[in-house]
Image (cartoon, rainbow, N blue to C red; front, side, top):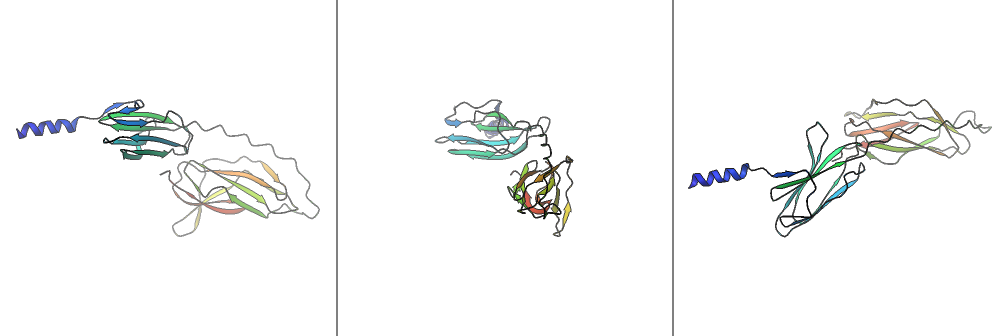
Length: 240
């Protein structure tokens, strides 16, 4: 009798969950499920699944699903009543799997992010404007304003250059440099995998000029700074 019971228990353990590569129905084994309808979401957007049940629990997971690569678990949660919410990483043209398992049955949906738009053609340089009589040289009184203090690898960090002079124009271009803080507190240049267009722009007195840092996807989390007239520090953080 003990042998029969042990064999039956082993058989139950060995039976895998039935997987269905489609969204779940509204109710599975007494568990009511509210599943997102969209198959595409913007980088950095959110996905939510609501679960309602009197007794049974549901296991939810969010995984990366890059074709040809091993799936990587990004978030998971077990719920009986509640909401499972995840923030999609900022990478463009990426694929993810949203998965739920209820009563041994597994359902999933593929979620993708749109491809990155083609790089915009930089605007033509503005026509040169004569400096005021008391401006022998362009203004170098400049403030660098970051629009955020954190960014994920592969994300974009916008910033502004502000010409603080009330009389002189400021000259700038598309280039900047990035540096990373070392363990000993010093700064070292962070190599960028792209080149800058050799163009020039003129910023009027008290005017602003919008720029941005495209952080390479392989940058490790840490403290960085952008150098462009002035310096400003920011953090590269992992999506989770």
